[in-house]
Amino acid sequence: MPKSSSKGAGKSLVRATLAIHEPPLGTGTSPGALMKTFDFDFNPAQLSISRSAQWKVTPTVAVRKGARPEFMGSEPRAMALEVFLDSSDRPTGNTVLKKVEALMRCCVVTARSLAAKQPSPPWVIFQWGSFSTARFAAYVASVDASYTLFGTTGVPLRATCRLRLHEIPRKTKRQNPTSGALTAQRVHQVVAGDSLQSLAWREYGDAAAWRAIAEANGIDDPSRLTTGTELVLPAAEEVRH
Image (cartoon, rainbow, N blue to C red):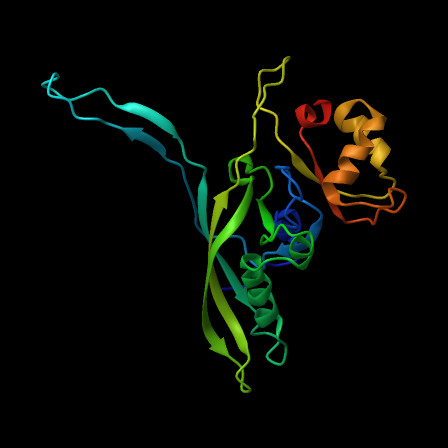
């Protein structure tokens, strides 16, 4: 697969990423601190999202044509996608090996959650520009890696990883009283001049809400924000409640 050019249209190409977070402590439903951002070498060529609803039908002799089905609830979303990795232009490196290991670790309990006696693998958020349907907090249900090219020392140079993500539902999806739209958290990448107070004012209209952002991201020192860091911004309804 050819690599994208850094000229022309390549400059405006939006890359898909997988934000890997610590699981929340306690009973929270917002991802914890950002552990790593997995950058895709190539955007997915295909991505599938599924959702199902559970219904129950209880047969009854009193109804000839069949009983009326009873709705039991909706299942969370599931997403399947492939991640293509290629470092054949750097045959002495181990980039592919490290990236596959990073994805595999998404199925392993984090040290922080284990220390807190709430063992859990990381939570993840897949992001690809304005593709909002595919952006939700999830856990990695499985990672299948196929290595298809190797260097002279046996180091993998090319691999395809098949990921399956399962949505982690929020406790309550409230509606914005003015727009009627469902509230949702989002991720913000820190730029020069950002502060937790300015982000809180811009996002919620209340600079004092910076504490909610700090808590959601495990920030101990709010005066130190590194440019490029990705922060989870809790939904406005969560901040107010």
